[in-house]
Length: 332
Image 1 (cartoon, rainbow, N blue to C red):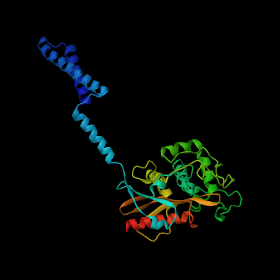
Image 2 (cartoon, one colour):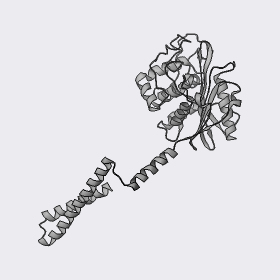
Image 3 (tube, rainbow, N blue to C red):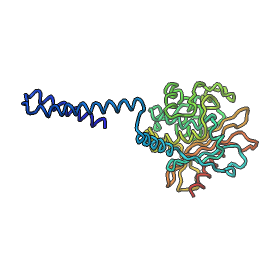
């Protein structure tokens, strides 16, 4: 409405000016007066409209429209469904979150743990890889890093290693170097952009991690300052791989390639993700699998986290198996 008023006023004034500067005869004076009066009325209407907007004095009809808009926004909130998946966890302490983006529905087992922030551990390698790929810091075709010669507990890390193998073997020294190349400022900016948990990288070197004092094997993402909940994990995955992703197709493609879980029985489902595990006083306190599944119906974003329990088989591989089994049963 306001644009039409402005256009009308502009047209009227142009017409008046044209009459004045072209020496039109007195027979046009009546028409000029009419146009000027119309412009004045339009200005009054515009002033009244502006005053109503500033004071909030709007009509009942307009208020109704605003309420209808608010109701639509409320209706757009994702649905949350509680699900008993305890049989899959088989006595383990943990939580499962599945987010169906097409239906905008969360299915959650143990909602309290689903909302509890914990150290992401090696699932954060998805994020550091994402940032490094997107900014050209990591080039998959030329990604070999030289081994220092230090003997690590995992024999797979005791050699020169490229990005694909480093991701699959969860090579900490490789991703420690990658994080340092990304740098604190860029890392902080990117974590805020993607709303990654508490976004706290203050313990950059990971000195809060009491399990290890080797700075080649510690960082803010390993039982340190950075924390994220399982529900937030699925939301981050959707921001990276969803329809409204701000990341390049090439970056997503390279990331999916290393995240693909090979050991799957179903050929109609592709599961992508990363495991992660953290300990305290020699006990596993965080065992993760975070990722998503591609099905004929669309993507399912999934996170399984297992915590400390009396059972001895709490591990990231167990979390991955649980995630794959639940997704497979949901799709069948």
